[in-house]
Image (cartoon, rainbow, N blue to C red; front, side, top):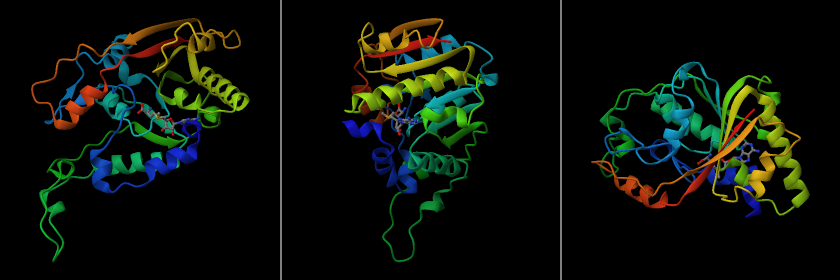
Length: 269
Ligand SMILES: C[S@@+](CC[C@H](N)C(=O)[O-])C[C@H]1O[C@@H](n2cnc3c(N)ncnc32)[C@H](O)[C@@H]1O
């Protein structure tokens, strides 16, 4: 599993996708922010993450600077934007990831007509995919994707400028390095950058499958080198999800996958 900590692995994983796949497939590790029903409505009841984030930021979301660290192909940036966050920067150290997500925003911004999928001359007709069902453009100004390594955030971002940093499974991936010293150095540098990028009283949310709240993660965040003012943890218990009225088949699969509990560390500068 050591490969999870390398950008090369993630580049390979994100590389091959055609436009249909880019439009149709987002993938969320652990728990999604919310999921969409087959008619496109955002559904989050019982999922935990959306409620937790919105309860931290009940109002004035549009003015907050949000950084999604190690965004992958997660839909969290889009969904937070749709919930009123208007300054969302998604970063990843995989260039392929950022190319793919940037392409996705470009495709979403185009108007899709059913003719867009009509077969080329001579080719057998095929039904339009869900991604290519007719729809108007979806433009999310203020949602940006940028190639960036978390260990060098401050080369790109002004120190003390970010209100909220969200890391879902990013630090967990960094833990997957068999070289203990390298792992320790990298994680220390990542956290130092996160700390410095946040404004005073800014919040770092670390969503993890690691339940040792008193163990490695707890120790890590209570490290006196970085004087966080508060560290708390909540369990994202997904056991109570009631399916919405029109679940898509993808959503049914997702509901099964998300039936495990995860943890969210809420770490305040
Ligand atoms: C397990 S995936 C999680 C993706 C996404 N956050 C989600 O919840 O679905 C880990 C992601 O973190 C990215 N990543 C790992 N280390 C990183 C680092 N030092 N800086 C930026 N991105 C990193 C990887 O490229 C990968 O996309």
